[in-house]
Image 1 (tube, rainbow, N blue to C red):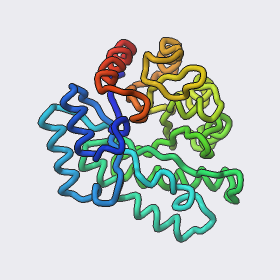
Image 2 (cartoon, rainbow, N blue to C red):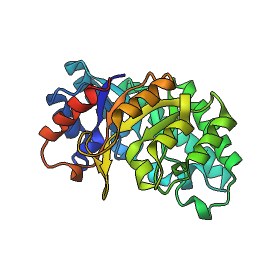
Image 3 (spheres, helix red, strand yellow):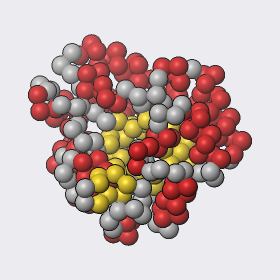
Image 4 (tube, rainbow, N blue to C red):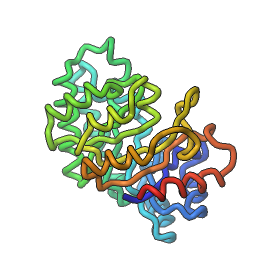
Length: 260
């Protein structure tokens, strides 16, 4: 395992400025949040890749800015919009290729209680997106997200059972806590199909803190990942409101580094 960080930690600072700031702080492994359409352009992506190469850094994963709309784009009853959205998501796969990333993160279906598509339809839609990503050398990984269908460990377990090796997961500790779920139960539901980790901390009354600022038993979490033969990375992901000074990110790095 390696330690990395998400550019989302400095949002809403523009992506290239976030990236440069974190590079200058000696971070070398990244998840990149693409935040708008202009960040799809080859020239912009080339600029980011050049920045990474200058520092000897690696971009492991890409997070789409359309995550909040994936229920509408990919998991609605309107089949044609799904087909068109498959074409649209090629932009993310191409962007990941430009950046040297191998993972694109998926949130999935929000407000699912009132949705009309079945779980099996969801799984089949995901499978089509997964297969498309694979054709670009990219793995589309389902993240557990509060208020999305993926917030439930039971759903994640059924998804894994249904799709077998044709699925992959991102576990995010804070998202499990926000959904009122036990992060360790979510980890067990994802099992050996976990390929990526968003690591953060929490404490009573605080669902998202920098690693080392809360009460999470990280050694237990690490041991559970190792039971599932996890070979991915630990990516620090919090929100800008969760810390006051950039030096706190460096302190969190030291905590996470001890787990690798």
